Length: 126
Image (cartoon, rainbow, N blue to C red):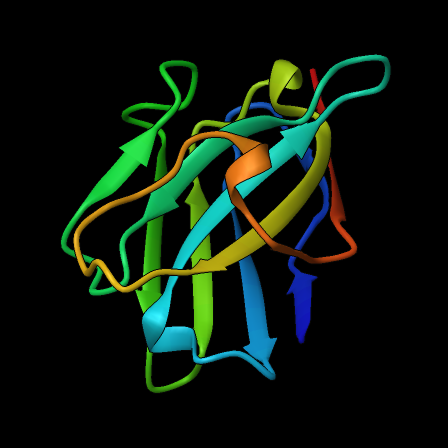
């Protein structure tokens, strides 16, 4: 199983960026997907999650209204569109996957996910 994130980088506050995560070796359409982030010295926290069929989403309070998670099951790819970025969004962003037989549920904690990408750095300058 491989999860490969891309799209991170350096952006000014107020800017936008889209992260992508391509999944292989796993039945993507059968998997709950999540985006997490980890800043130096902090725990890995949920940013957003999306159900298998994309019908349900979850967002951390800190990103609601600014970030949008979406998925393209035909491309085995999950996206995180990030708008109005703030310096406090600076972190390494990870995508994660877990297979589920329930089309509508999501998980919001790192312990619930089985597979992880290597992470992509986002730095937001003030």
